[in-house]
Image 1 (cartoon, rainbow, N blue to C red):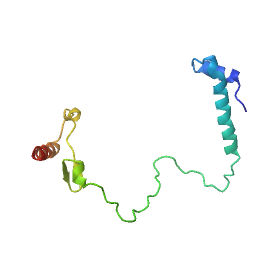
Image 2 (cartoon, rainbow, N blue to C red):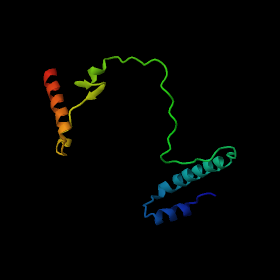
Image 3 (cartoon, rainbow, N blue to C red):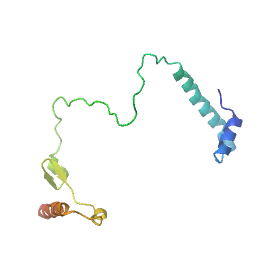
Image 4 (cartoon, rainbow, N blue to C red):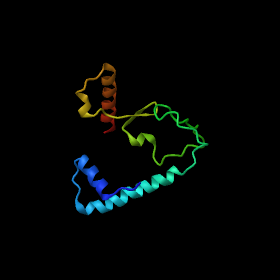
Length: 120
């Protein structure tokens, strides 16, 4: 099945797309090229391939991390002003301050602010 200029103009009219005359020829060639690729894919024998069970929440199994850890060029502490238990502590964005914080969040901010002041 090949796409003709008439098909392309009809689809463009249905989609209410402006189609300049100089784009008609190249688009017809591109669409026909795509259809040729699809025809090649249809010839692939998939009889021995299991069908996909799901494309949703089922995740690929993860492999275990193996091998030595690659050392960093700089210490992790050099990337952020403060760290706790191996995690970076970063200041709250001013745009998020107005969203409301719990008492626990404010204590973390106060500690971080104190660390930032000491670092300066």
